[in-house]
Image 1 (cartoon, rainbow, N blue to C red):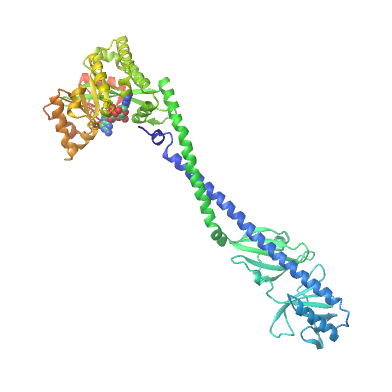
Image 2 (cartoon, rainbow, N blue to C red; image 1 turned 60 degrees about the horizontal axis):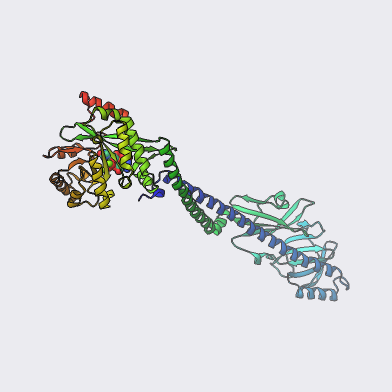
Length: 527
Ligand code: C2E
Ligand code: MG
Ligand code: MG
């Protein structure tokens, strides 16, 4: 049985591969889209987390400074300093608190009152709410150490340098800043060097710069703005398994799609074949059958051809099997018979010794209307039944009883009966005897084996001897080379041959020209 889906040339391999490729690429594209989105979500979330922490930190600074400024004790009095120490002790982020007046530091929580007031350096930035910030300032209480100082009113708050360090989320990195939008100032306070412009930070942009993805986010309440980033390489590494997963899903979907598209094609082949049979799209070509000794054309085999509506050539073994499966074979045989009568009828009438072989199927053999149809057609066109030989493959004769009686009926009516592809089926010598056929066509596989010394080649003489004993004629199929032709020509037995060596199957018009040329002795196509 022919597997139509598999063999149908309407779903070329390339098309299916194309569908699978496109859908794999689509899957990969979706995977990359998802990866881009998830990278964005991750980096943005990180930036917002940094902003949250900065807000919390600023809350503590502001409330501490407010409390210090609201001291009920005299400025830098023992009670005032003791109060500062208590606050440092209970605070989380504060390292030290100082008291300033008129630009000078007078006392701190750690060192107490200074011997002489210390002049404060110029601030690095002043926030919109008026807080002066000094970064990397040496601490008088801890020589060699630096702190970030926020000053408001008569108080200053000293924080450690690495306040954000515990928020590190490798492989992402951050830059923390303090800003003053009014002055268009941005001061990097910690983290990686700043790579975005003021506009990009104030605009809270998301962008790729160099090989990194950046997200800027600013506090809604205070001066900090945060920039979080991730290298594209790390983003790719983090998402590659997802991207591959989507690619795989795309590929599987493509395979499924190609499969589902192939199924309707099966129907489409049936529809197209029905239309072809109705609409005269089936044609017939003729391959000469010659006497291997003389090279004379003694007949031909009619072979059906179909080029479908898409312009694709469908090989006969595909559409003949399809016609069998779809119950269209009787119709196909009738179409072929009508064509041979129309195309070669006149030649057959004028050359009664010419034999035209037509392939029929087991279904035709079992069909009681086949013989009446054939007889009627030939009679209407005044063609002798002896002009039309019938070929049936050896495999199609497997139903013994049916084959014996049907073949004998056809022979009674004057048709010579040929077993096609002989040697590939089940025929034993006695079976062939019972079938009572006129000729066997030795399958191409045996012709191919000639001269190879193989077992297949060794069987050829046995088949020939058996045919001779049964008075059955022999046609050798698939003669492609001169040596093969010579092998059979040398034998002391009447043998007919068919194959590319003598001529390929050609349309009626060309075949008639060949016959004429041959008759006039001018053709070199048939040896
Ligand atoms: P088949 O009846 O055995 O026909 C001979 C096949 O061998 C043809 O193939 C022919 O083109 C090919 N052939 C001839 N000489 C050579 C050669 O030297 N070398 C090689 N390699 N091949 C050669 P095609 O035309 O493709 O037909 C294939 C089969 O389809 C036929 O095998 C026959 O079984 C079936 N078929 C063709 N037309 C019809 C039809 O009208 N009705 C039915 N029922 N079957 C048909
Ligand atoms: Mg044949
Ligand atoms: Mg054959």
